[in-house]
Length: 437
Image 1 (cartoon, helix red, strand yellow):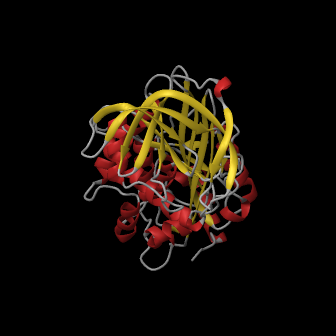
Image 2: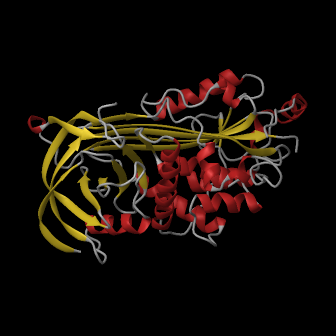
Image 3: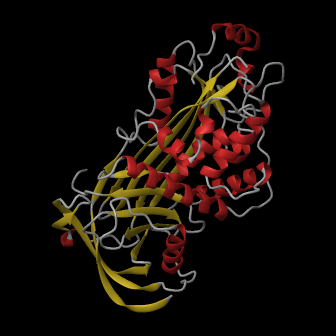
């Protein structure tokens, strides 16, 4: 159930002015941004932590979302960023308590028993790894932000938590008085963060009944370590999940790392610098329209591909590859991810008896919407991708080497872009029809 921000809260705004987002009655939080409109908490330097468990959680969460999303949209190209969606929801999770936090943790696949302090340390380590991925041949920029209505109080403890785990600050947005302006400010920030690839993430109608919007954005422009030769690119048939035959434009390459397990075939396409890779995953012939590997199968093939060890039943070697060029765009298609997340078990977070986001603010209600958008272009030179997610919080008054094989991705397949050091899933896509655009 949604609750409008009541006009009586304007008294609070008059009393607290700009300090409202930091909590009325307390000293302003430390501001480290150049723009004084951004209020930041005090980030704690956490002890060194291993970000790989968080990457594993984000991967499991991403597979669950893709499975539920595909079930609602069979026969469509789908692309999103598990990392970005998990970050936007993670910003909300840091404000959740009790059963609400437990439900979110289960859906986000967080390891049982993970304390908030341990999670913040892992998030900080994850953030540092992502910051190191930018380099020659690879442009990667990630940003997280909290937007708050100036009439509401955001707890200092929450500001400190999001500053520590996400390097995120809080910007004011007039959701209660001028939702069109608030939506425009958020969309401008997302457009800048994604280099103009995503220009419309939220709308005025969407933010009218919220007090906070939590956003996460990611931009990637990465060149292949070994580009595909354009002269070898050629049209060839592709069969969609509905058995429709279309003509796709295939890139062709030789001697790429290959692994197979449980009927899944996987090819690794590394980017320049050796810190990012795309894994193209072809399901077993005859699989259903929404086939996805198990987490164990995905782990087996990715470990085999990166040389960290092959599990029992895993075949490894080299492959000659035919892979379609694609230009995927769900920036205008995805819409609210709320039904998908409710289906996965996060319903308690969306309002009603027992919803608890009081670690964010005593005035926080439930999640009003979860919006995501993404684009992914795969061509001979490399990959350009952009993703953004927004979570609106309502306000209330209160292996053995084998000879080379040939792998042709001429039926629906998956694309997964990960950080090599941790396995953090930056993009996950299902291609049903590469000719559809």
